[in-house]
Amino acid sequence: MKKSPLQKARAAYQPKLPIVLTGAVKAVEGKPTQSVANQEEIRKLFPNTYGLPELKFEKNSNPTAGKPVNVGVILSGGQAPGGHNVISGLFDGIKKIHRDSRLFGFLMGPGGLVDHKYIELTSAIIDEYRNTGGFDIIGSGRTKLETKEQFDKGLEICKELGIKALVIIGGDDSNTNAAVLAEYYKGIGADIQVIGCPKTIDGDLKNECIETSFGFDTATKVYSEVIGNIQRDCNSAKKYWHFIKLMGRSASHIALECALQTQPNICIISEEVEAKNLTLDDIVANIANTVAARAQYGNNFGTVLVPEGLIEFIPAIKKLIAELNEIVAVNADKVAALSGNELESFIAGSLSAENAATLKSLPANVARQLMLDRDPHGNVQVSLIETEKLLADMVGTRLKAMAAEGKYNGKYSALHHFFGYEGRCADPSNFDADYCYALGYNAACLINAGVTGYMSSIRNLVKPSVQWIAGGIPITMMMNIERRNGADKPVIQKALVRLDGAPFKKFASQRDDWAMNTCYIYPGPIQYFGPAEVCDQPSLTLRYEHQGK
Image (cartoon, rainbow, N blue to C red; front, top):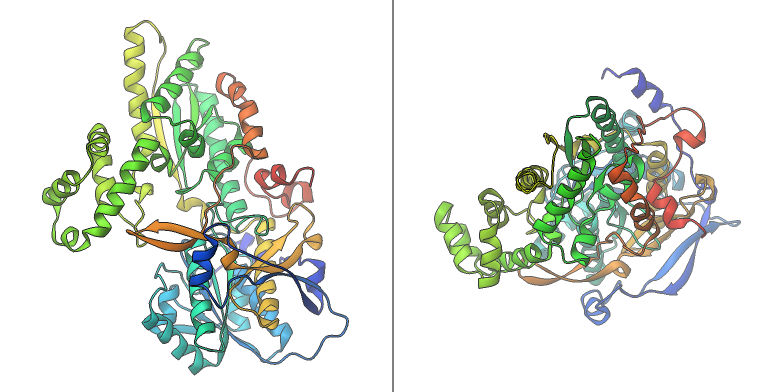
């Protein structure tokens, strides 16, 4: 395979491990844990893996000889920079336990486990993918592991290959699957451990023990580079308003981080929209007022960052989506049998009067997408809704009305962008390369410790990587009960942007200045070589969250 000069140079990069993982380790137990909410319900659903203690690895001065272990690895859900390094770290970790350990990669996600499709990952294969972006080493998929038949099919191939542990690399839904699988295998006495690794560029899989999910750092730096480029062009031509939608269906962490890095004129935070009970018209009015205010000084240009999941956070639309989800779930057979106008009429006719009025107020194409488009988990596919275009058009209409009233005198021309897939498979930043390698190596240590139902945890991330703290937390500790597809399901609780948190407060303290003045920052491309203050810095979100700790 032909490689670029950068690929060749990155292949030689050796990720930096926490000092504690550079030798033999022992697992030290902390206090028993409980779920973040719905404790009794979660306990009943996970009787064998609930309440486990947190684990912390320390140096082991009296190590015993390790035995060979066969491990299976799965990449689940959307891609995130650094996944290959998790697998590389896992490979090196199990080889450190014993050189005859073997690693099997299940192809195209959890479906590969069920369908018995796999390859053995050898050192030759692993070395081709170290420090690279993407999930192409084995591919990824979104198959949900939720039935006994699936679990038993997975057990068959694990027994055939002598696999003693499965590592599932994924986001909140994927790690919920990992917890369910761990519980099932533990309950039937199958000698198979299940370990999770926290992946999602959206940044919504985190808590006190999982300080950030991998890929967030790289993706936001990629987006911020391009936003900075657009802002430089914007400030050069001085004639366009750029509406930029950014990934982040369930939380606005990406938009907030990119705002902190680039200082746009406007950044919408979905969580704030919900907290203030804003309507779509309120959001449009706020943007239009800023456009008009800048126009008074001849600044007929600017940038607006829009989180992908904004629509779901507008309270009236959120209520509408909740009822739509329930209608679709309860009437699944009928919905499957209908199509086109008949299906739309049935769904719209089943709504309450309040939600029917909200649906009618939306543009026809947006209303149609809310009614019909669902992902495998039953979620509205908000990435398909062109919120950036919707807002830009509505702002244009509002400005015309303001001009007629003598409240606006300027020129308005809008351009639209959606930055999503551009950031998911970038070569990982040094931070993500180190973090992911440590997560995988740490997962091998958890396997060697004999535990199941744990997520690999690397903490103290604002410090140099040698000072990072390694260990594991029970996945059930992160869970609560949510309504999914018309039923109550145990899921990992999503971490939203905290309006009382340091990153949002930093943003809120400066956004009025950014709105009126042109304060753009141009971060430039990710730097892999050079001084640590340029190459190895974590995200601003992580830095602000841990200032003073």
